[in-house]
Image (cartoon, rainbow, N blue to C red; front, top):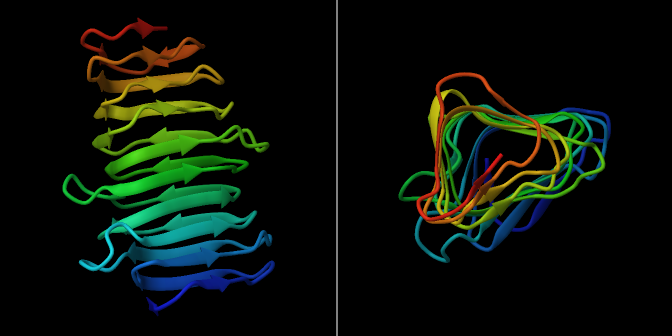
Length: 212
């Protein structure tokens, strides 16, 4: 599927299903308008070249959302406005192809990144659904400072994974779980809440302060 201009798909209580989907430059694809149905997408890609980081996608349903494979190629903003749980099965962005912004607004379940996650910015709002965030990929790499405001759990790895928050990371609004290495480049790691360590883990902040 090719999306050539700003487009919205809404199915109410029905399921929205897309295959491999490419979004044009300066274009936003909105999947759902708050209906109770779910969304399944094989993959999402922007358009290489042209206007950098200008292909965008938004999920807004109260059912389950799943992206089976990758999200990437010159992608701008990836937004989860609402869902009953969202799973990204493949890599979201890449080391040389970062998502400009990953914006998490609300969900009643978990927003899970099961593949690598590379983004310039990651925001997680204090959504009414009390959602959790799970970063389960082997590599998570976020450039700007991240302040998780969600009151659900934040999982930093699930099997010895490597998580780099160059600008530092904070999550004090809910519980945390760690199984891997969390690194900040001379910036703070503030997980001053109930924290569970599920396996060998390392926190390193250089000259930054680590708070648990």
